[in-house]
Every structure is written in C-alpha cells, then in structure tokens.
Length: 530
Image (cartoon, rainbow, N blue to C red; front, side, top):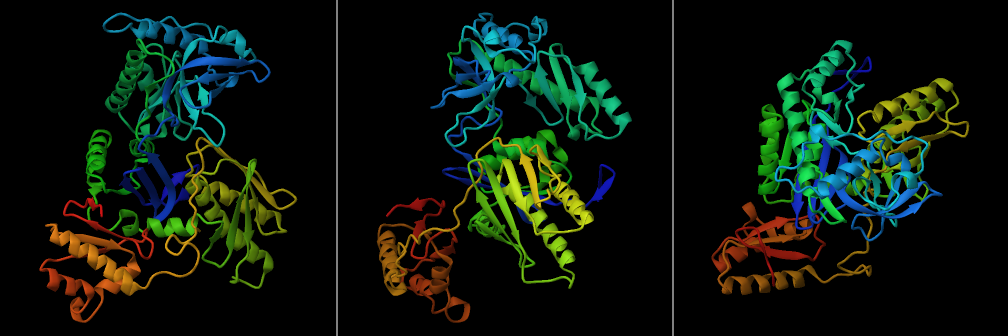
C-alpha cells in the first residue's frame, strides 16, 4: 500500500519489456502483468518531444501571434507567443553568442547577462523581428498534416531535478506533501544551484541526500554546456541535442521500488540499460535481464496477445460489457455498453458496477493508445447523484498514474463525461483486422501437404549447400503439424527430417507469421535468404 493525497492505494508491480527490431525499438510497460503503455521508437527517430533544434524564423503571423520556424521538417514548425518563455530575449542573445563564439573553452554561462523578461500580452513581431536564429525545443511531435509544435521554455530533465536556464527560481514538486521535506530540498538546491539556472525538484527527489541531488544537477549543467558547444558554428536548421532514448527516458521518469523486471532482447540495449541503471539506481541492477530464449519476447510475456485484444474498435470487458472507440478530427468518443452479466436485480447498481469497470479500462486505453485532446465518454445512464460522483472520483483515481496532463469533468446532464488529455505525439494505432495475406480474402489456401513439400525442398537445398545448425520458424498451427506425432515426437515430420538429413532441425513458432509463411535461420539467428 502507498499513501497519496491522504488515500491508500495498492502498489503495482511494473515490468518493462523491450523488443528490438530492425525497424526500431518497441517498449511495453506492464502493471501487474497488464499492458498499460506501448511505445515505438523508430530507428531513424527525429523531432521527438524534448529534442533541441537550431531553427530559423521563416514567417511571422501577427493575426495568430505566432511564428513558423524551419527546423528541418518538411513543414515549418509552429511557435506561439505563449510558448516563447519570459526569457525569450535572453535565449535569442545566448543563441547568437554561442553560434559566434570563437573561444576554445566557450564562454562562461555563469557570467551571462540575462535580458529583461518579455510581457505576457506582447506581440510576436516585437520579439522575433528580423527573423533570427533561435534555439527551440520540440513540444509536440508532427501529427497528421501539422508540423512540430515548438517551445522556447528550454528544460532539461534529470532523475531528481529539472533545470531551466536564464532564471534563478527553485521550485519543489507539489506531490511532495511533507512541508519539512519540501523545506529541506529547497534549502539543499538553493545551496548547490549554479547561477543563471532555475531548478525544479521532482517527486523522485524525496528523501535523497545532497550528494545525489548535486550529481544529478552537475550532469544536467554539463548537458547545457554540450548544447552551448554544439551551437558553435551551427547552421540552421540543425539538431543540437537529442532527448535520451525512449528506454532511458522512461526509466528516468518511472523507475521506483514498484519496478521488478526489465527484460531486453538486444545485447547492446541490455548493456546500455544496465549501465544507466547502475548509475542512477545501483540497488535495482538485478532487475535487468537479457532475453534469448528463441521465441519472440512479446509472445513470451503475453504482450502480443494483449495488443491484439486492446487495439480494436471494440474492447471487451470481463463482465461481458464492452467499449466502442471512435475517432474524429476534433475528438475521441467512447461508448460504454452493458454486458450479459448482472451483479444484482437493481438496475442502478448494475449500471454503476459496469461503469466503474469501464472507467478503469478507459483510463488504461488512454495511456495505451496515447489518446490526446478531448475525449467524450457516454457511460450507462445513472440517476443517483452519489453514483455519478463516485464514478467521477473513480475515474480520477484510475488516471492518477497517467503521466500526461489531464482533467476530468463531472458527468453532464446528458450523461456524458468529458476528459482532456495532453497530446504530445501521434496516437498509437494498430490495425487488428486485415485481409488475410495468405489467401487475399478468398478464404482458400494451398494444402498443408504442398507447403510441407516446399519447406522440405528448401531444407534439402540448404543442407546440400553446407548449412548446419538450421532452425525453421513457422506459424503455430504449422509448428504443431510438423512436430507432433508419436511418443516424444517420434514419427513427426521433424523427426523424419532429422533421420533423413543426419542433423537436428529446430522448429520454432511465431504468432506474427501468417499460416503459410516460413523462414530459415542459421546458428547466429540470422535469416537465410532463399
């Protein structure tokens, strides 16, 4: 149990499953074995939230009080006046000074003269007149036809603190409730904070000593020095600094005593992750493990199955109730439909129980699909105000673990609940229904006997060309067909091949393969192209 806002909540056992593929890295976050977040980091990822770019102001739009900035994306990025930061003039001055700096060590940021703040009600052309170069941070990734959304409020997050250049503010997370602890952290940070940096103390800093906070702060200041160095001689548009990989950024933000397992199927990512954990939380180093059991890692930990069940238009609930999710340009709509089970003869009580179950799943779906903007939920109608209030409080409780900024509004007189959730990147969409790649929708495929002959023909070819230690990967149904037979598989096709070719042929199953798909792999698990 853990206390939050005076209420007690069960601790969750968190697991991070990391699947490295040639296309990129897939990261699944499980809470009590249930999939709650799914992230995909492309191998050529760019314009991710948190990345810093040197941009060139291309166009000022006084009517919108905004500017379009070239950061290298096919469409110019959007920068609104409200995202300029009060210290925009200082940032412009710093950008130009760093670009033109010829000194070997770079100028001392501690002696940088901060410019006066801009006014909140000012105009964009008053600040960015002359279309200057400016250091910007990606606030939102490109979504649909829109380019990235930018911010000039530069922030560099660490494990325990976040630094913001050009100010001297020290703030402590409101989630740290003890006034004594807040005062202690405030005093420590004020004593170790360098000049011209503001510091926000994160919730994870609770109970940490001066040495730990100082180490985290020193690393972030070094990162800012790297930014300063990378700006020297840079030509816009240019990437100045990348956010950490999705894996390390998630561990930075989420790693706590709830984490009990991190499993990775790539040796390089495993080593990097282990080194990172060794540095930030040495006591958690044993939770990192390398997966090399042959079968796909997502299949092993039931991630694939949960993805197939969770990403359709219809999401079924254990009680028999189900959700319908529809997406429009302006908002997302979720409809809750009752199921076939009844907990009592009381219709109002049945509606409440179903709505509470649906609310928990909806909170999970918002995180899993990363839905942002306006979400409208049509719950089953309830008459009692106490039940409506209970549903709203439960929804707030279920969404408490959601790191995205959100707000839950009370149920309207029409029985609708409105939720707003921060949108920072495109939503995760996975098509769980598709035309069969084997039959192309005809409903007919080649006989398994013919497929068996084709597999054996290719197997014979590979063995005759001196291939050894072969493994064959097929669909689970085909795997059963080839491996089952007699006692200990004696009499199966696999056994017959072993007898015929005088070598063992390993046969693996992969649920991602279509029924007639098969591939051969060598000893190093590299695919053999036929």
